[in-house]
Figure 1 (cartoon, rainbow, N blue to C red):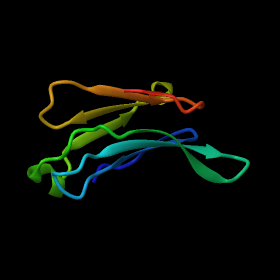
Figure 2 (figure 1 turned 180 degrees about the horizontal axis):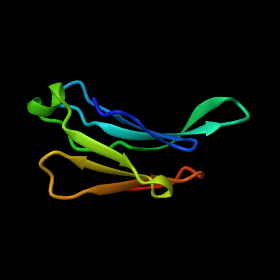
Figure 3 (figure 1 turned 90 degrees about the vertical axis):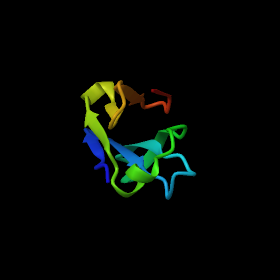
Figure 4 (figure 1 turned 45 degrees about the vertical axis):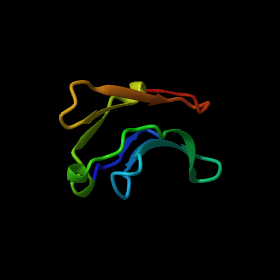
Length: 93
């Protein structure tokens, strides 16, 4: 499993698929002080599907870079990707 990343009031989660026929996704939540609950702010749902080798043991890294969101990398990939979700719900990645 890939552990969630927390920064201030933000929480980033990687949700894996059940098998290699489904894609995985990232979801960012922001803590709301008025309701005392996390609210989903944005998600990245077009992540590539995991292969059979990674569906049982997730080989991914997710690191917080504070105000700049998170850095996400799949094992074996040649590039790192930065994902950022803002208070208004827009995201980049």
